[in-house]
Image (cartoon, rainbow over all chains, first blue to last red; front, side, top):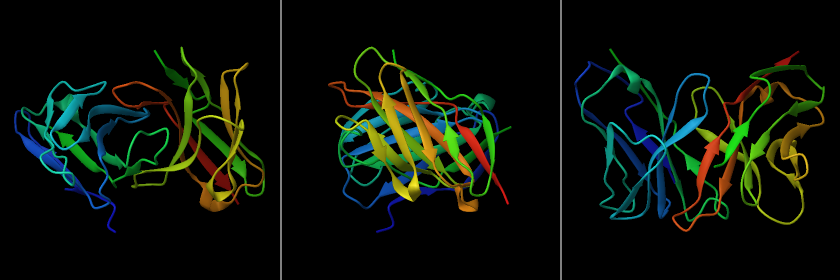
Length: 114
Length: 115
């Protein structure tokens, strides 16, 4: 199993550009999550999904959109990039709720908006 | 609302010394508590978690943590540090919700191990 994979690893965007961060998992997990990690801070939840076709906002959803058309994929869309979105983005997945199931993380995407 | 405080953003120990990383939480209901480790340029990996039952929880790589409700703490310890333990450690708390568990992370503690 590849686990949780993320592409790209690095990206530099100009203000106002858009892009999609890709996330895929091959563990047949129902739950998937997007987090951002700013320097010196813990991870903050952007969006999450409990199954295909179901998504919900986390703590910091503004400026982002997600979709979950398949169990395997959970892309994160930035429509109008802003410098405040410079961060490291982590995708994660779990079979079920976190208290009973381990959450597996991808290696991250480092995004810089200039 | 739940929250996590990690005291000390940087901790340095000698190889073979005790590792103690502090975590205090705030939660209005019985919490679920987690410790994650992040090695450079990698995602987070679960070290251990407390849900219910025994308050002393053992995890991977020789780490353990004790849930102390009276002190609202969940400190992480390891009797003898190894060079490979150098990493960033995050404490997290989750509350049971019908919409699904959500983790709230602390700001992290970077552990350095001196030879």
